[in-house]
Amino acid sequence: LRMGTGAGLAACAVASLFFGSVFVPVKRHDAGNGIFVQWVMSTGILLVGLAVNAFEEFPPFHPLAMVGGALWSIGNATAVPIMGELGIGLGMLVWGLTNVLTGWACGTFGLFGTKAHPPSNVFFNALGLTCVLAGGVLFSRVKPTPKRAESDPSIDRILEEEESDEEDALLDPSPSRNGGGGGQAKRRVVAFATSLVAGVFYGLTFMPVVYIQDHPEKYPDASTAGLPYVFSHYCGIFLTSTFIFIVYVAFTVNKPQVNPLIVGPSLAAGVMWGIAQSAWFVANENLSQAVSFPIIGMLPGALSALWSVFYFREIRGAKNLRLLSIAIGVTTVGAVLVGLSK
Image 1 (cartoon, one colour):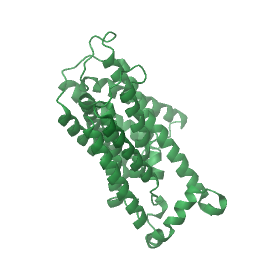
Image 2 (cartoon, one colour):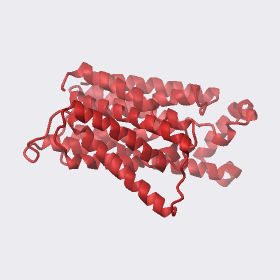
Image 3 (cartoon, one colour):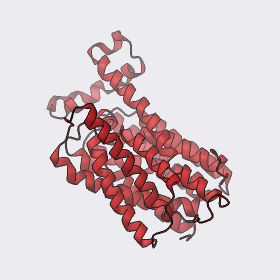
Image 4 (cartoon, helix red, strand yellow):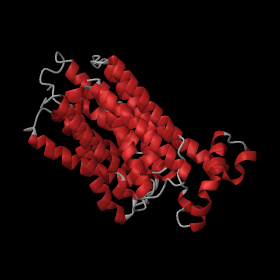
């Protein structure tokens, strides 16, 4: 259903709201290594896909669209460990950087056999993208509170004093700087790098659908709308997540980490994600990836950062909060400019 720029921006708002809150139910419980969480999430996602498929009156199934779902599942398998190390806000913001860059480049230049769909106002789009990425760099400088500090009241008193030294230690990871914190710094670097790689997988998730739409000679029954591909896309997510879970169960000799309290929250997270991704399909249809990716790729991270500050208290200290505020402001300005570029 092509409805225009206003509908596309509204879809961006819906997607950003749900994406930015999707891991909040899961974060309240022990998610283990996240593999079981992803599998339950994929069930909730598939339920949304079934509803959308019925709403669209059961359009043709496109196996190629499943590849996009598989790519997302591979990237998302790292989400829980990343958030465990970086926090829910910072984790989403870091993978949002490469997610935005990948999706924006594919939409603007037409990579992987797709057609280029550049924005109407290239200057606004480039300026907005620059602001979004600058905000992402600022977000990466925010230091989340270590998980082991959550129950230690003394950390609250000394956090602000240690903040500067901790940040310097991250930038200069020599033994003399880090002392006993070298292990934590290394884990953070690994989580940061893994998050960047996951973002690339997220950024490629729409490519198979765009390829189908751009080649009607190969796919004569292909729709130019986005929602008819949701069910195929979500089937790819469910099957890949199931495969990952089966491999994990076999690897652990039938002793997977399963927390029964996480089932309901994971299912809810899957439904929220399914709604958000459906909205993103609508946004792509009405705006193009060059516009939707910078907005939906980064705004959810800004929202999740607010969850980190006010609900989970993963980000503390005056310096951190000032930096976070500036980063959110810059990212928001960038998203507005990208929206205007259409």
